[in-house]
Image 1 (cartoon, one colour):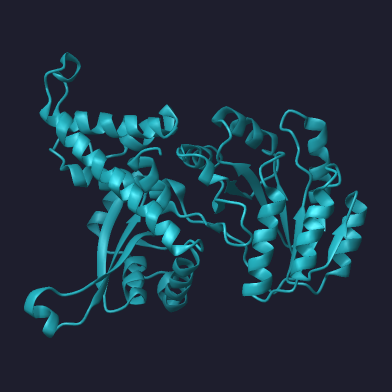
Image 2 (cartoon, one colour):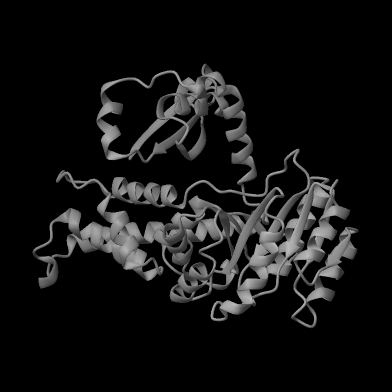
Length: 398
């Protein structure tokens, strides 16, 4: 893993520098505005400092250290790429209530401080026989490892993360170790993939997943944002005809938003509905919740997807952050023949341990997208915040 800082007058310029040197796969870890201190503040302007990282294959690390990055396609389009990164950075800012997030972030940072203090106390305490044979680095690594386990990161994933931390034998500073683990988690969570508008209309957005995870409410939240904030021409199709109140629930949301809604019962009917809305920007498709234990029911969803495979589409697997890891594994296995879906986690406000978000991301390799944290429409949804999750995993469960 290569981690570097870049400074420039603007955020765009700093991102361009990072992309030129580290390549298009570089992840922007942190962006901050730096104010000159002391007398310098009278003569120098504020500047932007970003921290960027790239997780390169081992065989390319030596090459990176010995030669400068060659000019690439990125250089030809670096201005567009930089603008895109700025847009993504703005898009990825959680859209929840600012005061609520400040409270949550403050609580997490306080737990991080408590963890650092606990590490320092344990490093000083060498009375226990179990710790007598551990060097200082091992003590710190073990405590952070345990912290990940407490937040329901699997032992396998926690070992993978900790094994990739510098083990050169040099004595690590506590802050450096925590920063390395934090950055590794952010890299593991990856770049978020969200609904993207395109000229190829209409784009079908399918929401699939088990029962009771909040698919219909999530659709209402996203429909509100794209209809009211982005001014998209949007329609809704529901194939959730199994639950008695499901159709009426989604119809109520559609009426409030003044968007058309169709109810379909099979693959042929969905084709006809799509033809009606061929000039629309987005068509959200609500599917019936299916138990991961009932493989026969899964066939209905697969038939719908197969019927519209020639259309421009995105698929979101909606799962609850409160679900047990072993059940999440079975759910993802059930949908394993549906490729290129995106993970959408609901109910993160109902659990203090977010390890399963990291676990399922590492298991499936599919990108994360949105998280929801309440029933309020359209407020309680945002693009998944990798930095928030990393802090939560290191800061302790609530």
